[in-house]
Image 1 (cartoon, rainbow, N blue to C red):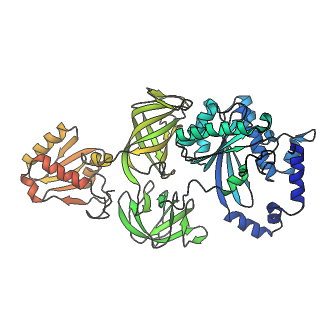
Image 2 (image 1 turned 90 degrees about the horizontal axis):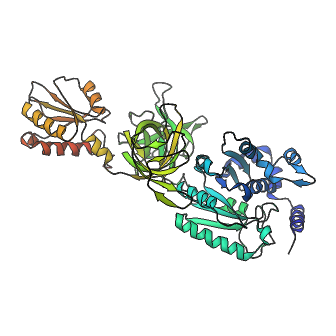
Image 3 (image 1 turned 135 degrees about the horizontal axis):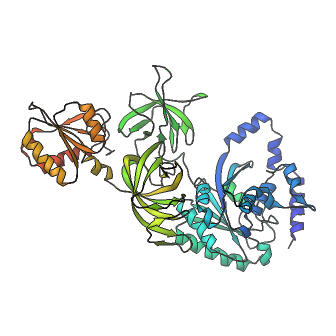
Length: 562
């Protein structure tokens, strides 16, 4: 068995005999190197571990052995011919020692096979919000375990948060194997415990790797000192693991951020593609109206594209003139987002003022911001003991299951299906600070239909008896009813959008017509004369049916119920 020094000498001798991939890449012309860099996949991963687990040393060794540290930086952290790898990420640790605001430290590096962004997250309980922020965009999480101590409460906390954030692949780096004499029994014991923890947390895949971050064993190069482990090193895993969030293969989503109209002959919708891909000629849905159209062109600052995919920022123009604005969405016809005003979510609380039931916040989802109310706090998550407990509030760094209602419908997906359209942030309206971050777990079906069924504009003409009956039934159901003889449809529909059921009477015996509160063009649906002599509840049932139809130019616009 080779010593640590002999292992390093062997690796060095092996690399001297031929050019490694990094050196081969370096001799290419600059244009080819830049083009090759742009073609590489980008993998984001987060790291978590307590102060004594060797996280900073692991990251430092990973950067050093993969040739991603400048010579002057290496020189500055070398003492007595020994490199202190932990100091390569010492900035964040200095913040901890000074007791100032802790933030996530991001580090970029690349190899000939892939590009990487490390989110170096603090692991202490008081920094849970920071870890959640850093890990929220990760494809893979690396959780460190001290081989001498095994699974601790911190390990459970980090693994639980990774599970809540939907990270499907966790690399469990069992570190400091040199301090347990590279014992295969110790590694197997910790591996079995970690696999059991993964099953408990529903983590799809956890990969235990025995490492010695200080000596570099199984960090970048495979170790010869642990023959019981024949798997890949951590860097080999990072270079070959599939991207956990395959945004390009997902269903197309483009939240509209801005309408671009440089001249009268062009009208495009600018935004970042959050999922999927699109090309000219594709049929799409314009939401919330539900109208169908086809993509006419896709434009960027470089010119028109034949195809665009997540996460590109583009301007999309449609073949039809459709009313879309900031906060709306262009989506694929198949599997569109759901329209809802009520949903259950996991919330990570980030504000010093606790979350309480009944509190109202601004909710930012994709490119729109709406008013939201916490209607139920179902439970608070004990991430160390992996239990759900009842609670009356969520304090700073708490995680809980919360039911939220919004003043306007969201075009949302479940978080496990799409991170971008399945997540949101809550903003405290008093100080405009981020109060919490949420992940949508369950969408209440029919919530939007129920809200629409009690708001809208109903023109009854000269039918006072019918108006009297409808008013009594609606008031008994808790609706806000406004009866008027004013005929200005534009002003009346604005009142309906505020939540009122408006009954408009006149001196003419005109057909009964209902206009939905969410109608963009004010289209009125004429109700059959058969309902003139029907009971009020039967007429209201017909109104609810109209309210549940797809929003479009006619009742059969898309058949999707959006």
